[in-house]
Image 1 (cartoon, chains in turn purple, yellow, green, orange):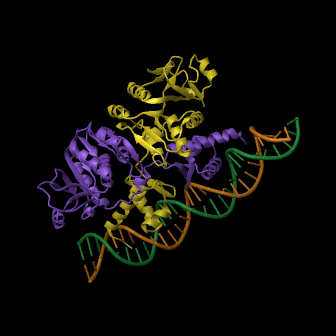
Image 2 (image 1 turned 60 degrees about the vertical axis):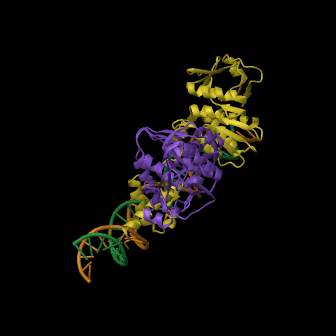
Image 3 (image 1 turned 90 degrees about the vertical axis):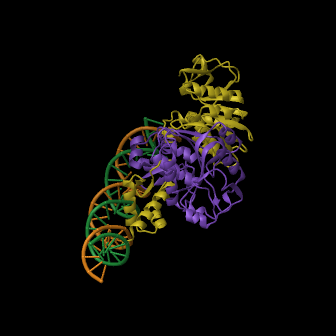
Amino acid sequence: MKVAVKYVQARRSRLAQLLQQHRFLPLTELCDKLGVSEATARRDLAVLAQEHKITRTYGGAMSSFDQTFSSFRERQVRAPEAKKRIALAVHDLIKPNSTCFLDVGTTLFALADVLRQKPIRGLTLVTNSLPIAEMLGPVRGYAVHLLGGQLFYRQSLLLGGVALQTLKLWKFDHAFLGAEGMTAEGIWNSQPDVIDFQLAVFKRSTQSCVCLDAQKLDTQTDYLLVDWKANFSLITDATPALLEKRGIQTKKGQVISA
Amino acid sequence: MKVAVKYVQARRSRLAQLLQQHRFLPLTELCDKLGVSEATARRDLAVLAQEHKITRTYGGAMSSFDQTFSSFRERQVRAPEAKKRIALAVHDLIKPNSTCFLDVGTTLFALADVLRQKPIRGLTLVTNSLPIAEMLGPVRGYAVHLLGGQLFYRQSLLLGGVALQTLKLWKFDHAFLGAEGMTAEGIWNSQPDVIDFQLAVFKRSTQSCVCLDAQKLDTQTDYLLVDWKANFSLITDATPALLEKRGIQTKKGQVISA
DNA sequence: GTTTTTATGATTGACTCCAATCATATAAAG
DNA sequence: CTTTATATGATTGGAGTCAATCATAAAAAC
């Protein structure tokens, strides 16, 4: 039984929109929502797939537009077990009702995941990482703030003058930062404006922690963030013996082992 | 042929991680990536699904964590055609190399989608909406900035003192705002801090536009944003005749019809 | 008003996916 | 070293999905 062309187009529009709102919908559910048979839904999906408006899977469909910070999430995560251990060690440090800054990076993302799964009461969390904000935003009892700034999409982070300016409004109990490497000389990163930002975070924090796994040992990039005399803690899965073996001389109590 | 328990656990961890990095993977691809048979992959997926670490679908799997601003995206979108027309009308207004502010709301999200599909060269875009930042972040040639502030996850927006502060750093060629309703008296919204913020945006914009579809006619909420004497443009699919019929007296050239 | 076009749901046979079962081989336990 | 447990891949039969086909009914065109 033929229906009017404009009804068909409206139905297909609504179908595409439904799939934009859900990550995946099985065919039977699409039939229910649209009030059509499987055969009709299949034909609609075939047309929309051909127009690249949806993505077809076996038994269902999803939208074509990938609304996640895909370049961040596709990044190869190395040493996930070590990062998880560091994240758990950090979790043990954080007290209820405290204010923490979370930097960008896969170790901090692992920390966000632990904070999501094991919430700590009354936390105020400040970050410039959009995936971390996205991860922790739904957790009841958390007040999540973003610093703002220019969006660097590939790294899923916000930087620039605005971020530095809004940073000045904050005072953190703890700050948890990432870096690219650590050597006998200190902690290294590869972008000067990231370092500027991180130093600014240091200044505004009662306790500043750099979270690095053992794979970052002996990695030196272009810019020295801090040397070992500076006032910060290192949270790492590398043992004190291993650190000493690599010529890293830390102060008493500076290293927190994960 | 039995393999060690720790190999099984490592493989399952890697499987969960793979699915965190991709929205969906078919079973055959998971087999390829993990180097196991379908039967083994199915058993692994069954275990991970039971532990709520992944979501199983017919023919494949995806991660459990829903990494989109789901409360925003699940919101019922009404009058999508009208919103699309308004979005296209706005697109026609925007000149290359200009600086625009995009507010929160489903009409502005439709605008973001048009700006994604039909990019305008050299735009600087400022927003406090995370889905809009996420949508436009990947577009080459766009500089996307977020204002920062406290994350209101359900509305997927940033508000508060920080947002107002960082707003002061900007001057917009155009600002495109949403609202809850319009009557003979003016434009209405339902939250005072949203109105404070929007008025601050008005002040910093050469041209301020409110984008409302006809469904918002005769809708009055708690707070008046602006009356019709104020200096702003209305971009709407409601005809001038319909506006006049509802007792809305606009200034010459104030209404841009979509 | 008549003819043509086409969208629909039902049906069908082919294809894909699935869990259960089994034999085998290795890890784990004693 | 022996015995037990269990992870694996292959196989199987059942379940689910799929596109093609068809009859029907209404929209569209004339």
